[in-house]
Amino acid sequence: MKVLLIGGGGREHALAWKLAQSERVTKLWVAPGNGGIAGEFTRNGEPVECVAVGAEDLPGLMMFAREQKPDLTVVGPDNPLAMGIVDLFEEHGLRIWGPNQSAARFESSKVFSQDFMARHNIPTARSGTFDFPTAAKAFAAELDGRCAVKADGLALGKGVLLCESIAEAEEAIDSIMVDEQFGEAGSSIVIQELLEGIEVSLHVLADGRSSILFPTSQDHKRALDGDQGLNTGGMGTYSPAPFLNYEELQAAAAAVVEPWLQ
Image (cartoon, rainbow, N blue to C red; front, top):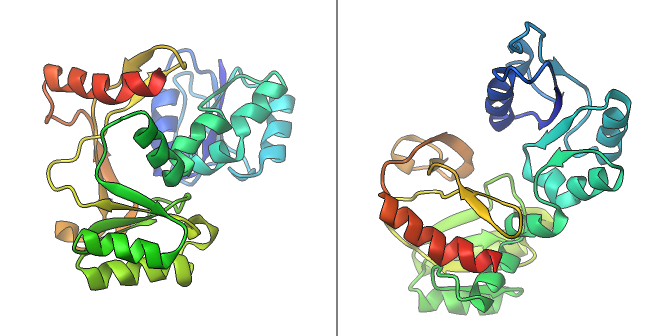
């Protein structure tokens, strides 16, 4: 089985490392890959090949896939999914794993996701979505400034600023909406009340009708010891995260996943 993996970060290195362990994978390309990935080998001794095609070069990726004919393409980063790579590959009869552009909006637009959860009564933190700084600051004041200010679009995992006071919240709003710290991704924002406690990520494989729960994980986003720094694309993740028992896991799935699928 020949596999094309798209991406070049630590996430893709983990995926490449695991894909290379499969007896079914005889050839693995990674576009663009990185130096660490280039040191991996498949079970049959074939070196993992990094190819000079960018993860957001959709025409280049499609051309490579049409020439090399991988049996499966796996997408790691968010951006190519938001750009519609799954739709493009499927239109040309190329087998690819990942959400289409419509489904990817749940990741690529926090405003879309927040509005969706509100419409379908999916539990989430108290929040508001805003296109103008004045209204955003008024809502942040209602929360006494203890809030998360989130750029709507993709920002490499760095588009969330955590605030503990009204002054910090106003500074964060101006940074995103006025100073355009995250560019077009910050033209709209979501503001949420801060929730304190242990964070657990629940991952689900879904086909639009049914779903399969993956083991839980815990992501560590903030830089520096003791979470003293800003959010990053991820300092590290481990799985399973031992904080939910079976009953709690099923309750979370019933409250979030089932209404989302319906």
